[in-house]
Image (cartoon, rainbow, N blue to C red):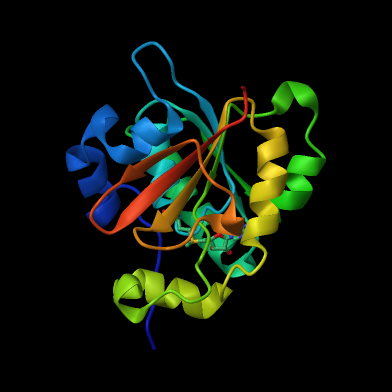
Length: 197
Ligand SMILES: C[S@@+](CC[C@H](N)C(=O)[O-])C[C@H]1O[C@@H](n2cnc3c(N)ncnc32)[C@H](O)[C@@H]1O
């Protein structure tokens, strides 16, 4: 049986923190990090927490939302170990277990985040795009996020500045909603929707 656990301090997460490109990496640009500006972020689809951890390590305040009870338990465990380490104890990274659609619709106005980040499991993701072991297991546990387009529509009402959607490079836009800005990489891209127009 295959096993996964979340280790923010070692392995892939440590590599991304050290060699991911800092504020120059696409994810940082997509959420709008600039010198002197670090947005508050709701990661609406936390998964294994890798993207959240990058953003928190860059100085953003991040709330991770995860609705799968199994994945949320893994995140809780990884977060506990991270926060008990000198490297993680000052990070602004929190976890909420539940569906982001409920979380956002119950959020008071003062707590609306600057940015809402979405990286949903794509229903027809090709095997090659899921090649990494962790992502394959994640898909087996959570299945496809069929309601991702509905999540985007809600997110657009609650982000103060922007919503960022991670997609496979050639995937259609989520919900066929055209972004205002696109950052394209080798295998993925970030579609950015400005909400403070
Ligand atoms: C592709 S994974 C995200 C991977 C993540 N960006 C990372 O760095 O590991 C998508 C995750 O979002 C979660 N998810 C999808 N829709 C959600 C929702 N409406 N509320 C909470 N979690 C959701 C799924 O359970 C799954 O664990």
